[in-house]
Image (tube, rainbow, N blue to C red):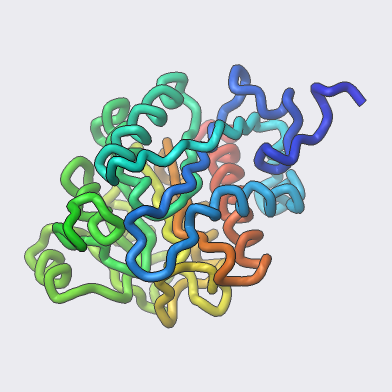
Length: 297
């Protein structure tokens, strides 16, 4: 077989060199194996490799949207080396790398790693899209001003993001008293998890808060632990697969997703199905954006 069309297991979906060429790609995935500020159970540094490995078992085709991802052009970038001088330096490294890739206008996807990677991603994307909004799916508030001696850890991600971009949180079901006061003072649009929250309510209440360009950030612990056990800080309750997918598809039709991240997969804490679920979410986000683009949205 021609090497240009030979499956490559180091690429998302095992795409060939032709299907994953940076020059022709409309999507760039950046794996970031970083978990230096994890405070409960470590292991998210293994998440990116596990997502890419699990993606090779998925079909390229999204039958719900009629999108063949092998035709989209998905480039899997080299793994980002962690910066061991501290989280602020790591965030700067991520910002610089994302900025270099997004200069070409592709959809950028960060594969974490802990949720801290989001800060660098948002900072970089805001330079290109000053109006950018962040839709933040997470079981936790992540709104502490500082935690364990740093302003740049996983417990402060949403707080730092809110300082550079408009932020809307959904799926939250655990906050500290400090975070609750910050929310109640009107600083953040936060929608606490409600199992009866409908897609119509998302469209009527959440979408109006988002600007045209959106950065979608998904911490996998937003999902119910019964389907996503492989996270370091699980919370009882949470969204199910269909709810998250419906939000992704609705968002992609109504707004322009310019970047996304998927974080906090700690593969050793759950069975193989968790990594497949994470890979499938990346698959769904890319397919949803490609569908919007193909229909002229």
